Amino acid sequence: MDSRIIENSVVQVNENGDIDWVGCLVQVSEVKSFGVQGWVQVPKSGKTFIRIKFSEIDYIGQAVMA
Image (cartoon, rainbow, N blue to C red; front, side, top):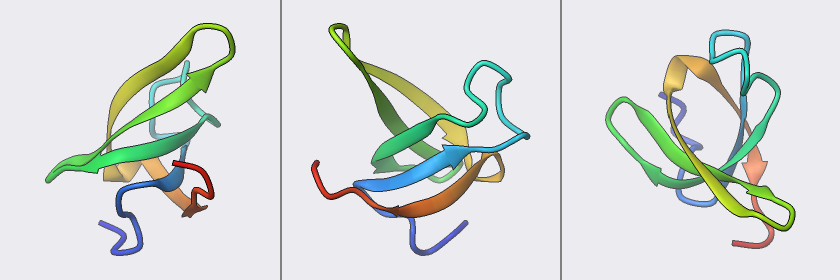
């Protein structure tokens, strides 16, 4: 677990994650014991949510807009 990952952190799905999500930037909505729950904004469709393990993400930074 990366201690920098908190609510509104931005993480990127790495090569250990689901192939459909690799490279996606995810805004963290909740830190869980296994990893994070977060979302990706899809234009004209809204938020798409994902739950992902710590081993499948890399910390990018903090979101400016929550």
